[in-house]
Every structure is written in C-alpha cells, then in structure tokens.
Image (tube, rainbow, N blue to C red; front, side):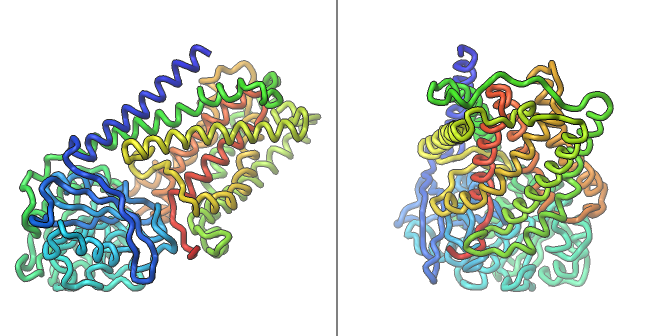
Length: 578
C-alpha cells in the first residue's frame, strides 16, 4: 500500500509538472494568450481550433496571421511546434482540427479539409491584418492550405507546404509558377510520401520532380535554398529539404525553422527573432512527462480500486503457470511476434477497403485496425486452442479464464475497469482544463473523446475486447512461465507483443535511410506503426500487471479494450457525416 501511494505521487508529479512546463512554453511564459474557438463553414460544419494571440495584437494595431493545419489522423496539437514559434514572433496563429478530426465535426475531407473556413475565420478577426496572412500545413494540412488559397485567392500572402504538395488529391488544385502565391516547399530528405506528393520514388530525388519544377516555373533541377520568382509579385518559390522524415517534421528544429524563415520573408510586421531561436521542444518534453505520468497512474490507482470490498470477486491467487517450456516456448514467442506484423498491412487494407464507412463504422483507419485485431484474435485463439487440447490441458482456469462466481466476477471486473479508465480520463480532463494540453509525444496522443466519439467508441469496443481476450489467452496461457518476476514477465510479453513491430520499423526505415523507397511500401500504415509500438507497450504492461494483481484475465482485458478503443477513436478521422 505504501509503494502504491509513492508511485501514485510520482505519477501525479509527472502529470502536473509536465503540464505546467507545457503551459509555460505554449504561452511563452504567459505572454501569449491561447483561446479555444469554434466556427462554422458555409454548410454549417463546425471547425474547432486554438488561437495563439501574441501581446500587442489589437484592433488598432492588427498583427500578421498564420493558419496552421495538421495532417491526416492528427489534431491541432501536432502543429504546436510551428504555432508556438510563429506566435513568439508576433504572428496570430490559428491551429485547427481538420474537418472530421479532433473536435471538428465530421466528415473528414469536408470543406477543403477545413482550410477555406479557417482562412475566412482568420480574416474576420479584428486584431489580424487581413492583408498579411500566411498558410502553413503539414501533409494533408498542406492540401487544406492549397484549398484555402484557391477559395480565397486574394485572402493570403504566402504558403508553406510541410511534407506536402499541390494537386495530389481530388479537389486540390495543381500548382504552377503563380499559384499558390509565394510558396515554400519543405520536403524532408527521407519523406515517406515522395511518390504521392511529387511523383518521385525517394524524397532525395524531389529536386528532379517534374511536378515540382512546374510549381517553380523551371524545366531544370530545382536548387534547394534558392529563391525563384519575386515576393512582391507573389511568385516567390523556395525548396527546403531538412534531413528528417515525414512525421519527423514535427520534431525537427530545422523543418520548423524553415517555415519560420519563409513567413518572415513573405509577411510583414512580425518580430525578426532568428528562426533558430526555438523553445517548442520543451513543450514536447512537458507533454511526454504528462503522458508517462498518466500511464503510470493506471497501476497504483488500479491497485487502490481493486482493494474495494465491493470488488471482492475480481481477484484470486495467481494460478500456477501452465505454459510452454523449453525450445517450444521460444518458437511460440517468435510466432506471436511475427503473425501480427505479417498480417498488419493486408488486414488493415482489407478493413479500410471492404468495411464501408457509415454511421455504424464511421472511421476508415479504425475499421482497418478492427479487422486486423479480429483476424489476429482468431489466429491467436485458434493456435492456442490447438496447443491447449493437444497438450491435454483440462481447464482454462490455469490461464486465468475462470469466472469464479460467474456473472458476478465478470460484472465486478468490468466495473473495476470502468473505474480505472474513468480515473485516467478524469486526470486527462484536469490537465486539459488547467493547462490546455493532453497526454502526447510526437504523433502519439491520448485525448479526451467528444460526445460523438464516445458513442462511436462503444461500437468498436466489442470487437476490440475480443482481441484483448485472445491476447490474454496467449500471454497468460501458452507463454506464461513459472517463477518469473514481474520485470521478467513484462519483458518477455513485450517482445511477444511489440517486438515484431520494432522489427518492421527497423527494416522499413533501415532501407529508406539508405536512399531507397520503403521496401514494403505503405507509408501511412508504417507511420501508424509508431503509434502501435507506443500503444501496445502500454497494453503489455496493463495486461501483465493486472493478471498478477487479480489472478484472472478480465480486468486487464477490459482496461485495455476501453483505453485502446478511446485512444483510437479520439485520435483518428471520422469519415461518415454524423
């Protein structure tokens, strides 16, 4: 009990200490006002955003503005490195949730991805110089910026396309030497989307892209760092190629500095602070500390919840291990690690392609994850089932699958899981209220769901629960070995659950960094695999811990199902209008 209180205190210190650091950096020591806003597109679709208002921006002395837009299946907070640094230099910044993302209304891709209504809203603000506005967008956010430029051709002065391009998606206009106005292309040396964006097999060849040359008004190889055209005429062009990847743009001081430099060159009225003077990375450390504290909080808080006498049916003594031993165990771990990765691309693509987005299953990416999870759950249950019966095991109770008092055990386990996850999201809500941040690092985030997302999550909860029950059967049935410490068991389980995804990323990026395309293709799902590594690491710790606390699989499976479902639904895009 004493250890639990100590760990709980450490978790809370991380959460609130990290939140405080993130808030101080995000507001530049309190000098920048951050304000949540919500505005309507022409058809009534509501778009959410955060305004960063620097000191001195008033109706009598309006400041230059920048609309900052994140990429696909991210949210406005991903753009905070750019937003923070623009605001520190005197720009009013509007960072939006794209249509169908974060707290903006679905469907995704609606209203030019949210770009045109965002620019209209920015131009309506009295403290913004409406003749001095820039557009900055990463990936699909660049398409939103191009859409905004096309919808309001006289409503902006310059554009930064971070890891993005013109004319790469239906409805997004192609670029030429005069459109968009004053455009910088920041396309990283190892960007995974080089074929989609600029029609070249590897990002290191982007200078020779015919599409890029058309944008720059030349038929020669584009020279990095050279300014083509003329700022006053609106035809200026410049290429930057920082040495990072597509998602790496959000962790690169070079990529952020390139965007700053272009806005300072093409807009007027801002502070000429050097582009290299950046503090945004301290916010990333703050939200990372909060994320680690929030995850750590689950364990001592869960232990306290399980001490409640009303949940007495949940726990029992941990049964003796009945898993594989010897060389067979190593083979089973290898199979457990490789099967989810071998099926990762095909099952996700099947789910995205053959499960139509509709009011019942409205999220394309989550549909893919659902099919992958169900497929792997069936494979896992089948393989473990064959082993169980061939090895003449007599009862699933050895694996923690007993129900004790039957329905009472399951109901109390579900109640415990809801309480534990509810405490976690209560803590997340407190961080959002106090610091206007969430639990995140880089492309991985744990956000509060909206009411609509909560309803959506309840639908996906059922199939994902089945997957986590199958995972418990694997970890605490076939793979559990006797007389192992918690640390050893956690390490072994982590290898089985996460090791394959680490291997996938090492192969994909090992080849990409040598100057060749991703060997297995699928850049989007490859980037999503980083989030799988983070989320499945949390899943492994929860499963291992709560099995040891309860002697059963139910609490761990239910906590994981609730947590992962809410993270998925709140963090991806909703494609169906709801």
